[in-house]
Image (cartoon, rainbow, N blue to C red; front, side, top):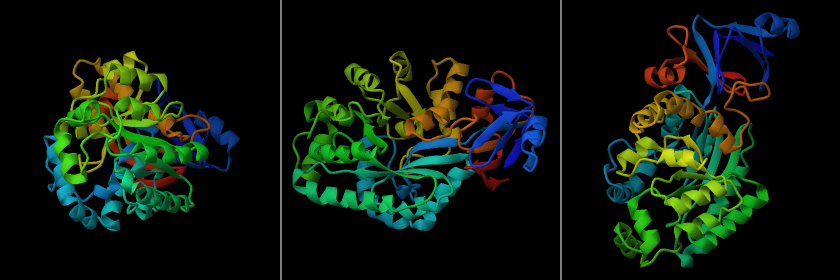
Length: 406
């Protein structure tokens, strides 16, 4: 048993003062230090310095570790330009990101306070790095392929990768499934994968309505994707439309990434089935896509969280940076309440979306915690200050273990 004694504790709705936390792998009790010492007399005590803040570890629900070699290889500013550059440089990027490269990306996330991440794995090359990561990992094996003639081979490859991830036996590693997108996965493949998801109760995610090209292709089999599919895949029409794609997930909570081009009917469908939207503001900006309409999500009571996407469409894997960009991009949002929502979007709401027992400093939750060194006693605008000022993260705890210390 351990006791940690900060000056302040960040909870979802308020800041607690002069309380301490007793924990092992989970948080056992939050109370005044004297009470905890009396109840746990043999506990090791860590007393933090003045103006220390204990807060939940951050959760990055959507990141592509396999593409962490990118820095200047890919083209930004336009989605189709970026996509063609990915195809052109795919082999170089994948071969250029070995286990050391992927481990570096994982370590950088840890340094930024990310104690859990959702890895979208296209090829399974990141499996070993994620299995060895100090963080909790939801490992989303991605299914992709729109050609019916290739369905059996593609599904066999997907199953091999999923089975390999199930063999990882360590605390905090959770095999899961990703359906790439409505334009890139044949409905036959989706139905087969979802049968496994539902039978085994796996977490599920998908990209949805990221670009105008996707919107036009799914609606009319036209637009910028027309040339792309005709030249590369010999396809002249979309394999499904957006509503059909969403209907596959009816009754099964799914994390949908981007959603910046979703229409009224699609948003209502997302709300009705209680899916979660993953907001990746930097990625959307770099690829020339729209900004997520969070006001509309809030109006429809759609859950939304924040993630970085991968280094193929970002310059760092830092949720504090991601929140800061979002804070400025949504200029019409009330500043304080939006900052508070962003913090929840990388802690408690992200934990709920991934189905993990963390995201909050509360009794019974996993002891995934950060210690931040504030400069003075926090006030009611703490959420804004946390996002703007990037305070030093002096300690990172994962499942009760001190994993990183500055």
